[in-house]
Length: 88
Image 1: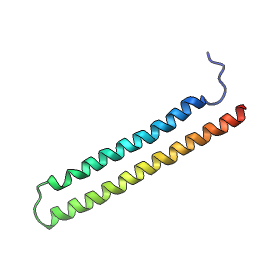
Image 2: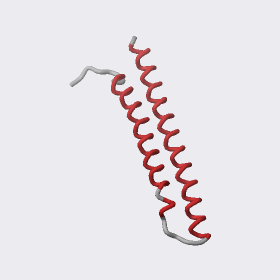
Image 3: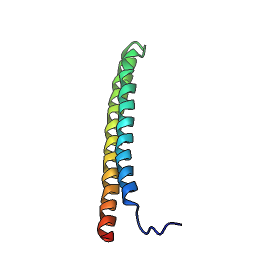
Image 4: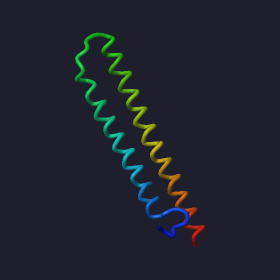
């Protein structure tokens, strides 16, 4: 059993970086999905409205996911900083 007390600071910082990477990956997938909307064959005003609404929704979702990932990463890094200071 480990004698570690508190946080594994290195692992926390790695997690923070991974959180941002995953947020960026999800954002890229949403952009890719949005790029497929023009190919959806649906004629008329309903199809146009759907594509517009869906594109806007995906853009908002992408922004929210990336912002949440960035915020959580900062939180994890802040916790790591506090642990580092407490351990000094």
